[in-house]
Image (cartoon, rainbow, N blue to C red; front, side, top):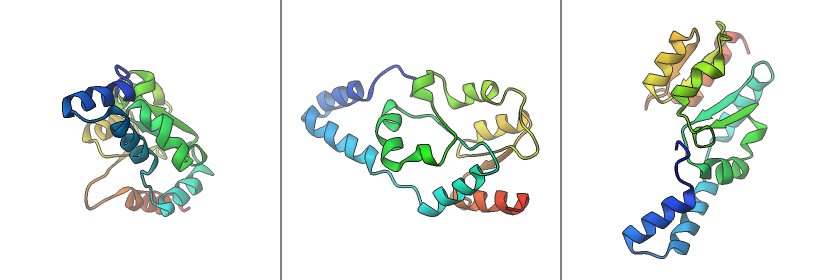
Length: 150
């Protein structure tokens, strides 16, 4: 996730360890990356937020996310910017201070499943929404829209 290895390298290593065909494993891997699912309602809600705010997807992920998942889901249409830790060779927690660079306001939100990332975002002056089993992304997007009168 920090850019040390490509998806091909990881799959090749796993294929050797599992004693399976690397081509077979690669095809399953690519198909799984391309078939990831995001709720249509979530994407619609993000699009409505994008009308008023900069909406950024910041992820700790492998190169396969940028190569296969983003184009498959057309995520570039729903986000102003997509930042993947693999491409930057830094974790999202490490990138966050530079990304916000003192620009957070009372209308700056992060929705994340990492308490460390959420805590850091709050320390930097934003409002953090920690994803849990009970409170998913759709819950927080709805709350943000209500709070902002959208």
